[in-house]
Length: 485
Image 1 (tube, rainbow, N blue to C red):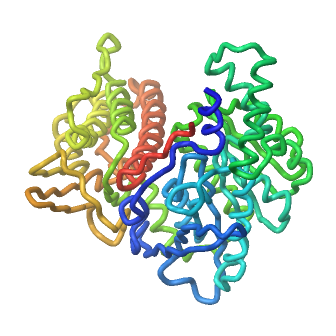
Image 2 (spheres, helix red, strand yellow):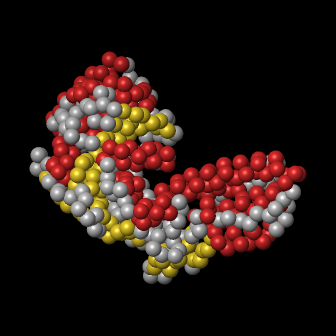
Image 3 (cartoon, one colour):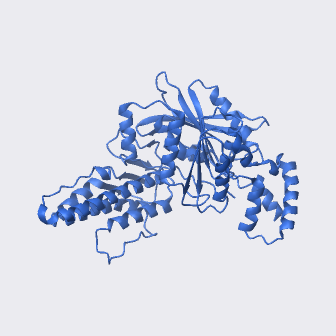
């Protein structure tokens, strides 16, 4: 049992992956703009080689320097965890740098240190970026161990422009004592403390750091960098109280966001929105041209969406189920909303989304006019969704994601026996404008007001679900974030 606790600290499960499969492609398109992935190797002060990737535009803006955010992964993570950060930040002229810390992923090293040695790895990455004459200021985005790493490094380097700290722990010893209770290890307290002292000596010998020195709460009062804290309310691994303690003593400008979920769950869309706004304000990237700004807006409004492989199907089913539920709002209250069958493929379910949205809009028009329902439904269905497939279980990769230069969101992939074409929601829901007929104003004015209010509310929910759907689809090529252990 003591060996298990030692491995919990210095040798959690290690992420093994193929960069060409689990990272963004060497060249890819996002929101109509071309980007590239630059892979490189750096060497830390202990002689370990660190595998790194830098996501940058294929062509830098004329006479403009771009800021960079360094993404720091968790104790069982790797640089593939930064895929979401690249998706969120690249369209705003913010480059993304990510690395496998020593002892993690494909980098050298046998042990991790939950932030102690990782801060030195981070220093190497920052030094590399400062030597790059195309990079301006630097921000840090860390999760779990990566958040601790960012905070420890930020206390030593006040030139960092801003930090996002997701699920940091305040004190490693306190965290270990809490986990004894969480996992119901039935030992007397004095026995646990003796075991921790033994673990301390073993970890010092193997990984060359003292667990008693790993205290973020001591670094917080010395750090003045603007910071955005985040923590899941149901996190049992690192309790939200840890972020509260750090936040209370933090000396710089600060804000904290709490959200539903646990330590390893996907973060909600409003959290990602807050992160992008925070980095935009502290990094001051050059403003995109008006034409490109329109492209970005259309991209994030569900326009011209392209698919990658390895989607989180449980998330998609949840979203589709939510859309189905909203689609039945206009129906009789006695009818239960239909559920999504687990036996049904994601492809089949996605095919139904356009129909669900169209039915919702048409039901609203029924309340307004009482007729012409079938004509509107047929027209909306034709605009919303088109899907063909010879094998709906086959999901391919495509290197152009969300390009708005093409008329439809097609992605064709082939293997030895199958070929598939997808076209999903080529027309954004908000742009579907069904024909409204003139009702009798005197008789229906009050009824119209209620229906339009409900319509706006449903459209807002559909847009929010659409954003979650996009993140689920674009999480990329089969990578699932390794759970912290």
